[in-house]
Image (cartoon, rainbow, N blue to C red; front, side, top):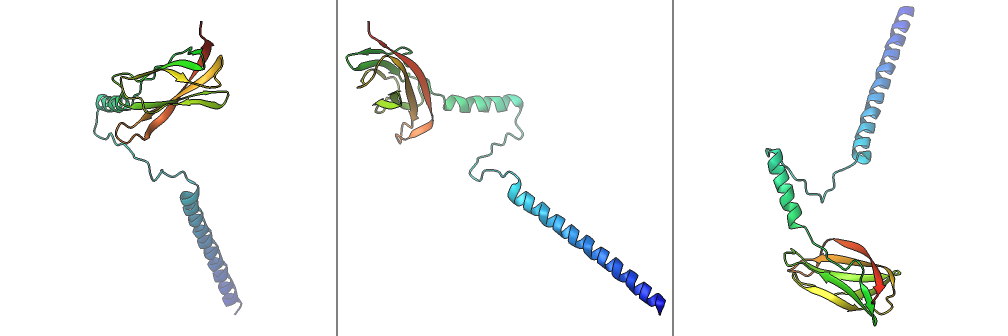
Length: 167
């Protein structure tokens, strides 16, 4: 009878050890799943992933250059706009070969001095009424505008300029 108690006690210890190992493995699996699900960075669901599979390095570069060319916007402004009688000579030029129409704002000291309408490709805005403008630093922010919808396209580009008194 003593042997059967020992045998049964050994079996209980082995069963407990197996149960502890199984619970540990289960917890490890649940932990790994939780980490992968909640803590690992996820791909943006709205992202578009470009696949260049099967393309040579030259073909990939040509494709990237083409995309860059399609979204390029040339910005031309006066680096030192002149101030005369409440008007500022900004000389904002939307180049003839521009792929986008443009809009721009002129700001100084955190205040909006001027906001343009749509400037078509090949057009120039030379002088703007800018009440409150003074000699000093200002910012001209240009936004590309979709030619069909008139809605902003891409990221606005800001240029710091130095307004000077006209001579």
